[in-house]
Amino acid sequence: QVQLVESGGGLVQPGGSLRLSCSTSGLTFSRTVISWYRQAPGKERELVAGFNDFGATRYADSVKGRFTISRDNAKNTVYLQMNSLKPEDTAVYYCKAKRLLAGDDYWGQGTQVTVSS
Image (cartoon, rainbow, N blue to C red; front, side):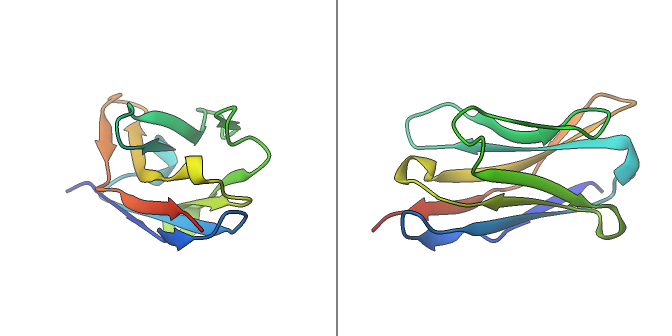
């Protein structure tokens, strides 16, 4: 059974930092591509950060220079370090895994990030 579990969300002040974690199971980690999405109230889900099939990183323009995606292959875990947070970063953040061979997607249940003074 494929399972993705996000953690690390919470309430922070503008300018603060959070680190999100995405723990995976039921996947061959080296054969998956992991990315982070977010969805704010009234808006569609959008790509925040991810890896391409060579392991290079990509980011949404709105978070470049502030967010960093990384992975720990031994722990089958992907992280999203979020610095200099802004109120517009408030959203539910989701982890997505795509299996390279099958091309199918799996989603976690999300973790809430709220940036407010």
